[in-house]
Image (cartoon, rainbow, N blue to C red):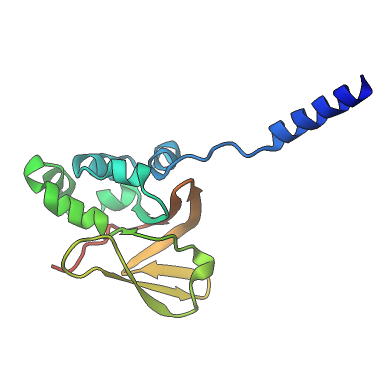
Length: 162
């Protein structure tokens, strides 16, 4: 009887310490509450599924405040169905097809490929002291883990060179 009780206690302890399944990038972004514009844009561009289901992604995620800093009418214009391709190109410029955490960055500028198709697909990532910039955007919060990648919060929407 004692062996059964001990076995049950060990099983219960192991079950309670087992990590819960993490959320995907879209779920983590929704839970944060400060990426509503990014999520609406990803949905309008047809990319929300890829962000939820893709593997080993890095997303440089502009906040709602970063989108609000764009010139008046920019977001509304990009969300129109006829601008879906342009919106997808902009959002794809914020995503890497691999995980890149802040501890992987050397203390200098590197160039990394995005998932953006065509045109300039390289982001300039600079780590200097405790600051990381991506193109001209500053990383304000780094290394937010999701089960399918990493999110780095940035203070600006990055626009790919045309």
